[in-house]
Length: 362
Image (cartoon, rainbow, N blue to C red; front, side, top):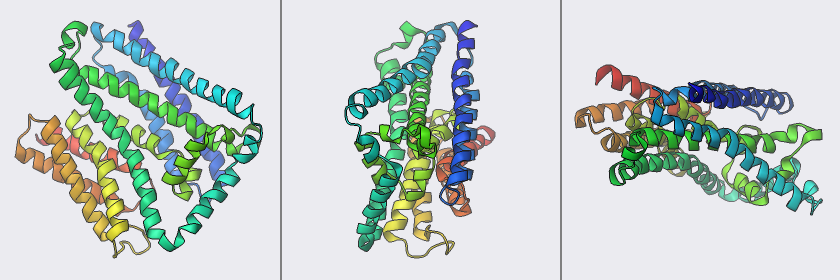
């Protein structure tokens, strides 16, 4: 029971961060009302809150052999990760900023925006290519969490359990170990991205501005992988991983399908639309017919592969139906053109539709 109670510490950390993010969002809306998408920020706040509430239930039902891994997960999320973040910031202050005080003047949001705009201005003659290049960087960053999740699951189930037979020593299955790895890595990663956002967006507080703590390589990565309006919002990869948390209760094949739809499917829609798209729909949108079709087809394909590999207990016909459901769900989300980030909508909607479809009909 003590270990179960300790799990609540992660909930407290995430719920506290939810309100911290909401406070930042309110300040951003006040100071950058035109650039900041408050709907996305509210969605991010809700996801932080939901992630905090759900965390203890990922380990249900509680078993004695699992208590060690529960404690280890809490240690990495609540102790190791915050200490790591603090050490990085302390290093930046003691060995970079303190030794070179001019950095504080060289790393400001205004200079960053100026360099960002100048770079985009230089590429205007090749604007489509430049936008495509930025989008590839962005989608690559979004894909990284999904790849890590699938790698951890494969390692836990097929190596740790099947090959090494470590489940016999530790008393938990490969699937339980996989969930432990994914939950721990995912929640720790969210906290790291959250800390990055607190530092990056601290320019809204002139007297407590820590923007200069960001290393140049991080600023360069942001320049390559962000659209201008995203500079005034929370980091997309963090939001994407947060959106994975409500659907992690579904069978892994369903979860992996939704994760890949939200990354590869969405990436295909965006990149193909930029590269080959001619007809926009709606006309006021940047989305194109070829983008919609490409995204739906790729979503179907990645769902089929995920379900075939990770959900072998269902038939090929059922896999085809569920894959089609995933592709259609993605298409409907894309066509809805709501003023909410696709990184929030795609994994949740596709995951829920496929998950409930799986339980209701198969």
